[in-house]
Image (cartoon, rainbow, N blue to C red; front, side):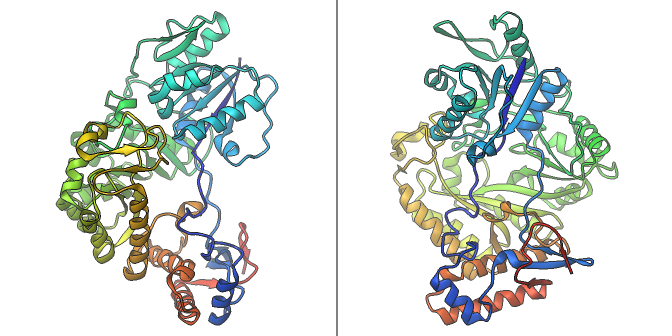
Length: 534
C-alpha cells in the first residue's frame, strides 16, 4: 500500500494585512512612496537590497528562511517509516499556493493532517485538491481540526473513510494494515470510520509518551521540533485544545535529555524548539531538567511557558544554565478582570514580574496579547495598550480575539457576556459581546500597533519577521537585532506614519542611519537569496 501524506503549516501571508500595499515591504512603490524615497536621497531603495558583511561576503538582510522540520510531519513520517509503510509526502504549502505537484500514480490512500487547518474554507480547499489530484482514492484524516469536528467533516466529505482521533503511533499503522488485509476497522483504536452507511466510533487509547520511542528521522538538520507532552493541564476559556486532547501526559526529564542528545548526535541538531503549549510544567519536571541539563551537551533550546512560571532569578538562572535561549509567553492581557474572565490563572502582576525578570536577562523572549476577549471593552484594554506603549521592551504580538469553534469553554459565559458569532465554526467570523465587536477590536489593534511603533523605541511587533531567516543580523546580539528590526519596521511604515513627504523622507534618512550603525547598508541590485561577493 502506497499512501500520500499531506501535512504542514497553514497558509501564511507575507507581512499580514497590517503591512499593506503602501508599505516599503512592497517591491513596487506607488507614486507617493516614490516621492518620499526621492526626497530622502534613496530613490531606488528596496528593503530587499539591504545587506551586511559576514567575513569576506555580503549577505541580504532579508533572506529566505531555512527549511526546518515541521513537528506534525516529523512525527507522522517517523510513524510511517518505523512501521515500514510506503508513502510520499507533499507539504500542504503546495496546496495553499496552488503550485503544480506531481502525485505518484500508484497512490492507494490519502493521509491528511488537519493540525494547521482552522476553518471550513481551508478544509474545502484541500479536499477539492484531493478530488482533483486523487479522484476516487479514499482519505484518512487526523489532527486538531478533525479531532474536534470529525462528525461534521465525515458527513460533508463521503470520500473520508476514517478519522484518527488523538494518538496515531499505534492507530495509524494498524489502520493501514487492516485496510490492506481485510478492511475491518472495528479493532483499530482512536478511529471514527465508515461501516457501510453507518459511522462507527472506536474506543480511545493513549500512548505512554515516556515508554514509546520519540520520533526518529534519518536526515541532518539544524533545528528540531519537539513535543514533550500532549493535552494541557489548564482550562483557558479561549482555547479548545484540551477538548481535542483531554488527557494530559508528559515525558520525563530524563527522556527529554536523552532525546535531545540523540538528535544532536544523530542529526546534527543545534537548536531544539519545544512546541508544547507550556513546557515548564509540571514544576517537578522543570526542577529535574535544571538539575540534569547543565553541562550535559544538549543543544540550545526554546519553549513556551506561562508568566507565573517565571517567578524569580533562580528560574532564569536554571533556564540559562540548561541552555535555554528563548521563551514565548501568552500574557494575553494586563487587565485583572479580563484575565479572570479568560480563566488564565495568571495575574497582571505576575505578567509584569515575568517581563521585568526576562527583560534584564540573557534569555530572548516574546510576549503575546489579545484584544477583544468577551467582556473586554476599550477601557479595560487600555491597561494592555499603555503597557505596550509606555513600558514594553522586546518582541510582542497583538492579536484580535476569534472564536475557533463551538467547543471553546467561553460559551459557558454566552448569556452573561452576550456573545454572538455569525459562524461559530469559522475563526474569521464577525462577533460581538457586551464590551465590543470584532470591527472595534480590529480598529483598536491597528491604533495600538501604530502607537507602539511611533512612540516606543524598544518594542517590536512580531508579524513580518517569520518570512525571513532569523536572526536577521547574525553578527549582532539579541538587543542589536531588536534595534535593526525596529528600524526596518519604522522604515517600512513611513508612508503610513507621515502625511508630509518631507517628514517621511527625514524618517527614511534616520532609519537608514540607524541601520548603518549596525553594519547594514543599502546596495541596489544585491538583494539576492545567495551570498553576495564583497
